[in-house]
Amino acid sequence: MNDIDESFIRIDSTVLRRTSIHDMSFILISSTLAAAAVVILLKLHGTRNIDVTSFILKYVIVPSKIFIILTKLRVTELLRPKSVVRVKTANNFVFTTIPYNLTLSNRILEFEVRDSDVFVVTYPKSGTTWMQEIVWLICHNADIEASKQLALSTRSPYLESVDVGEHLGFQALENWPTDSIRIMKVHRPHEILPHGVSVEKRGRIIYVARNPKDVCVSYFHFHDMTFSLPKAGTWDEFLTKFSNGDVSVGDWFDFTLKYWKESQENPDKIYFTTYEALSQDLPAQVRALAKFLGKDLRDEQVEAIASHCTFASMKENRSVNYEKMADIAAFDFSKTKFMRKGRVGDWKNYFTVNQTAAFDELFERRMKGAGLNMQFEI
Ligand code: PPS
Image (cartoon, rainbow, N blue to C red; front, side, top):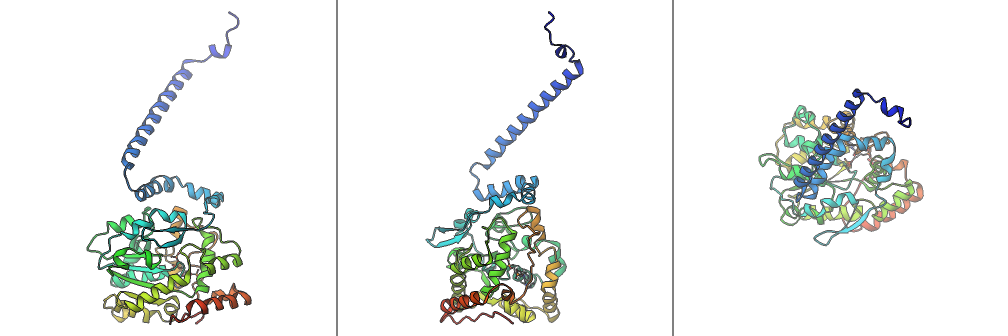
């Protein structure tokens, strides 16, 4: 009899009641969660993997702020792909990319193209965002106030990404209202554009090329601010990878020359311009683009677009400067800004004399006979 544990005897009824309420709530919450999981799994079963990815990003990853926390703790570094991969797409084209991009690769080939579509195509870091904003304004009566109301990634989605909140991509484009123009951002070789545009020649392409030395510098910094790309390494290592086409999206020369050739053969379908031409005379470029797109703009509208689209203005404009991308932790702005320098010729601050000589030799060799001149300074 004397062996009874005193603490056991002393448990009073309040504690017992609390314990049973706690147990009840635990059972209730866990069965609700289990039921919700079953509903979600049934709903997702048979759903396309791009919709599942988008769903998980939108409802699990973004609200839980997990990437933001991981970025702060520098853990996202562990999620970086080790290197780019080469993949063969459904039409037998070998493409250099990052693993995350494979979800959509073949589906994009079958994307249904409309005659009114405008594809803003570039090799990364060549002035895509700049051109998207210009084209959106040309196609929307230079309505600058309206442009500020919505993020550029909502107004002009990225064809190669899935929808996440206001950052729209493939699914939003598939469901875009038919009475509204689609202005899409694309970073893919011509060979793997949607067949509707590359083969059937529907829609129009606006291509922006940038001199590859400045592209390489801008891309080098960009690798630092996003963990979706492999580590850049040192400047020298990155320049070697870029020169060999061992970066996401692949070889700059092949990529650019294919679009250049296509633009020569189909000038009414592809408008080919350069970052340097935009930097040199923006109003003239806005006029030429409006003509290509069949839009009539008054002089004051051209001026308004040109002054809204200067680097200084876009750097401060939260609807285009990608600062909202921090919400989904896509970019780490403590490393560098998306609107970094916006200059022609920044490469001179990075290329050594030997690197310049080697790259110039590569450029001469690869561009020989193409009839495409690039400006490395203005
Ligand atoms: S991405 O991530 O591939 O879509 O990047 P992209 O928009 O093609 O290129 C980013 C570079 O373009 C510069 N930029 C501009 N330069 C001049 N004027 C304007 N308005 C402008 N908008 C963007 C941006 O600063 C990046 O270049 P760097 O050399 O890194 O500054």
